[in-house]
Structures are given as C-alpha cells and as structure tokens.
Image: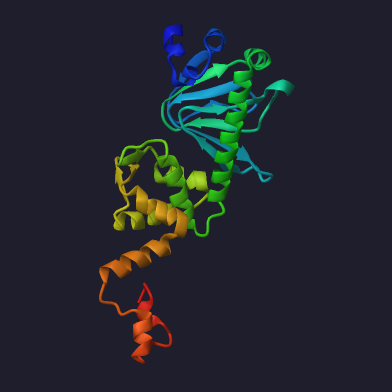
Length: 261
C-alpha cells in the first residue's frame, strides 16, 4: 500500500498531519490469507497491530495447555501484540479467519510515537479500553447460563462487525466448537434448532444469521425464553393462568404448559 492510500485510512483521519506522516513513514501493511496463524507465539512482529480488513481471533493457553478463545477483533481495532516497553512477547497467537490486512508499527516506532504525540497516547489508551471490553465479553460467553446461550452470544458479537441484514459468517461447525470448547455434535444440534426457529441458515458450510434480533434475544435470555414466546404466539387460545385458576381448572403438575408435552 502506497503512502497516499495509507494516509486516507479511517485510522488516520482523526490524527494531525504530522502524526499521520509519522505513522505512514514508520509502519508497514501486510496481508495474510484465511486459516493462517498470523503471529506464532514468541515472535516480535511489531509493537502495534491495527486491523484494516478481515476477521481476526486470538487465543491464550491455560495451565493445562488448552487453547481458550480470548477475544475476537474486527476491522478498525488496535492490538498491542508485544509488551513493548519490556521487549517481552505476550502469550497469545492471532488467527486469520478470513483474509486480513494489518498495519504493523514496529516497537521502536511505537515508542517514538508515544513520546512525541499526546494524541497517539490517547489513541492507545482508548484501544486498550476497547480490548478489555472485548475480553470481558468473550470471557462472559464462556460463563453463559446455558450452552445454547453461549453459542448465541458468540454469534451476536461476531455479527456486530457488519450492519447488513443477512449476515454470513465464515464459520464452520468445527470452528465454532473449537472457539467455545463445545462438542461438534452439540454445536450442530444447536444451529439446527436455531434454523428451525428461522434464525439461522447455512450456505456452502458457512453460517448465515437470518434474524439477528431473535438471536440477540437468545443471547440475552436463553433459548427457553424464545421457545416459550414462539409457543405462546402459535397457540393464542391457550388460557391465561389466572383465568384457569379462577375456573377451578388449574392443573396441579403444570403439565399443560410444558414445551415438551
């Protein structure tokens, strides 16, 4: 990417002219194919990585040496790949889900920008805050009330990368199960249930979100809540609990109101 195009990136528009040129002169743009590990652990590619295009994920390893999804980065997001000031790599790796284009700022350039441009300091602090928010959301996904809710929260967050009504995500069942540490049969069963509700679809092995609002409902309230809503809408003649009790016909075991009855 030439300097003129680099200066027109959305990232640059909020910066002063001297800072824009300092970043352009000291950085480089790299493109990586999908399904590639962009930066293996222990390497020093640069002080800062800024995502220009594509979907990027990162993992960390726990004490049992299991890879756990940490967070997912969409375009226009800053990552601090190295502990720049101590010259020590962080223990995570970046994985390109789609073809990604990244702006790399080497460590020595990064330190120079921090020292001479207060506006860049504010930009880095803001980027750290966004990263922490992403981490909290990703970790919360693993603590969802149900496994179905966990899948829904993951898909809703990924759909936030695009405003198009019908969101096609480049995720296979295998990829979702690996990210969330759920079994592939369970993920397949969950997506099939979402499809039966008209929320999900698939095309060429990829995942398509057809109804983002109802998917958000599952992410917030769980699958049972949506299924109950659908059941109530499908049977408008079902008597209200209070009316049934007044008529002396309230069933003691509540079996008439079970979804699986």
